[in-house]
Length: 59
Picture (cartoon, rainbow, N blue to C red):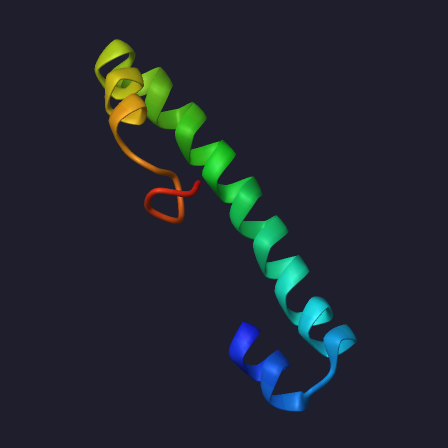
């Protein structure tokens, strides 16, 4: 989606395409992490300490 926004050459288009997708991913990540934490407990918490959520090395 970011590539399509950049292709239009408009910052507003890029933001309109990227922000909703990012917010949806954030919601899904939180929901899945809560379910995984409930299912696997401390072993999943340890895994979270070693790995990134979405972008390796950044987030």
